[in-house]
Every structure is written in structure tokens, then in C-alpha cells.
Image 1: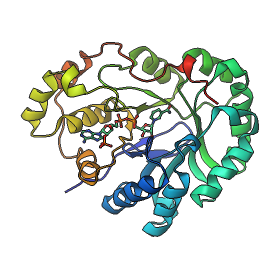
Image 2: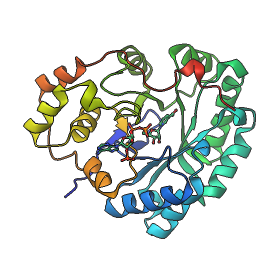
Image 3: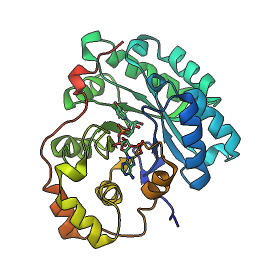
Image 4: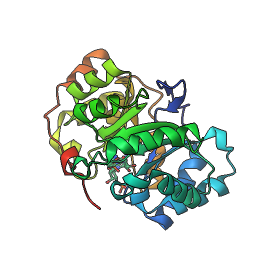
Length: 278
Ligand SMILES: NC(=O)c1ccc[n+]([C@@H]2O[C@H](COP(=O)([O-])OP(=O)(O)OC[C@H]3O[C@@H](n4cnc5c(N)ncnc54)[C@H](OP(=O)(O)O)[C@@H]3O)[C@@H](O)[C@H]2O)c1
């Protein structure tokens, strides 16, 4: 049995379902299968990107689901090499998705070496005005990158999507977001498939046993209670249901503190400065 997913209010008077489906490493056919299964059991928020090569499969799953467009929240992202031509990039993404607009369009990486992300932000402002995306935001931005766009634009990103999990909790960046009215999305919420949180943090097993939940459920619930937005990726149908079933229990304040104490500053994915791939 699953329960309704909470929503988080964003700084542009919209809101986003706090839990969704991540789709990195699921190419079109797998993404179609997984997204179809996810939508069938109640997921309404899907995170994709041009570089994931799965917008076509996800678009097919959305169409075949028959779910009204307004009930869905779809995010896609502007890839590095496309920063100079954001309108072409979003138009191609929308064609592949079979949608007239996305709910959220993100600059995937600042890739500051290219010198194009600030201008890309100005382009995203126009895409929003033109209704191609409802909201605009960023991903993998550090405070200096947020400063650079704030210097040329009054539009504050609704959120910043960054690596975040119990081993890498981004406390300083989250405090910076809070000051600026920017929500935080956690990518790699379960460790990005690069690290096994149950081995790295043995105490999670005790917590999971105490709440009669799995380790993944306790970790995802921790993200939710921290006010973060999460979209775990799985290719397994049973795990889709497991990852959605986290709204029927509450982690105590003491146990939230215990999990906060597992922060090891341990990044497992690429750092913002390294995300400059073509
Ligand atoms: N903006 C960015 O730069 C960026 C970077 C990375 C990711 N993302 C987004 O964030 C999403 C989530 O991050 P992620 O995919 O990197 O990592 P993740 O969701 O933290 O972890 C995915 C891994 O966890 C496993 N898993 C999922 N549910 C599980 C469960 N209940 N029990 C045990 N294992 C479980 C998956 O295996 P199975 O598939 O075998 O179940 C997969 O190996 C991505 O899919 C993508 O949409 C964004």
C-alpha cells in the first residue's frame, strides 16, 4: 500500500512532488518499461535529461499511461554543449517527450570552462516566459555559480539538483540555498549505485530493523524529512513500490540526528568543476 506523495512549494508559486523516479542509466526501452510501471503504481514525477538518452521512452510511457498532463511533473535538462542554443535543445527534448512543455528545465552542469552557463540562464528565462517550461532551475551549481547568474538575472532558480545522500549531506550548500529561497534536490539519494550505504554505514541496518523498513526506505524517508526532493532510480518493479512506500512512517528527531551524524563529506559522483563533458 502506498500513500500520497507530499509536495514542496517552490519560489515561483509552483509546487513539486517531493518523490519521483530517477532515470539515469535507463536507456529508452528500459526507461519505457520502468516509467510505465512507476506511473501505474502512483509515481507522478519523473526526472530525465537529454544526455540520459531516454526521453523518447519516457514520452511513450507518459502517453500510454493516459494520466492527465496536469497530474504529472516532468523535469529535463540542458546538456553542456547545448548551452549556447537552449531553445533548440528544449524543443528537441519536447519532441522526444511528446510534450508541449516540461514542468522544470535545469542547466545540467555549470561547466564554467565553457563560459556559457550565465547566458544559458538568460535563455532559460525566455523559455519560461514562452511557456516551454513552467519553472527553471540549475544542477550541480556551487554558490559562485549561483552568484554569477544572480548578477545578471532577477529570476532565482527554483532549485539546485546536487549529489546528496547520508555520506555527503551538503550542509553548507543547503544553508546557502535556504538563504536564497532555492529548494534542494538530491541526486544519488541512495548512493548513486557507486557506494553501498548499508556497508558504509552499518548502523542503518539497526534503524531499518527498528522501523520495520528497508535501508533504502529509511534513507529516502530521511531525505523527505530533511525537506529535500528525491527521485531514486531503480530498474526493478518491486523496488519502485518499495521506494514509494515511505509516507507511512516517521523517523524520530533523535534518529534524524543520528543519520545527520553519518555525513562524511564523501562525494561519490563527479564534482561540479569536473562536469564539463561534451
Ligand atoms: N543532475 C545530475 O548531474 C544527476 C547526476 C546523477 C543522477 N541524477 C538524477 O538522480 C537520479 C537518482 O540518482 P542515481 O540514479 O544516480 O542514484 P540512486 O537513485 O541513489 O541509486 C540508484 C542505485 O540504487 C539502486 N536501488 C534503487 N532502489 C533500491 C532499493 N530499494 N534497494 C536497494 N537498491 C536500490 C539501483 O539499483 P537497481 O536499478 O538495480 O534497482 C541503483 O543501483 C538519477 O536517476 C537521475 O535522474 C542527476
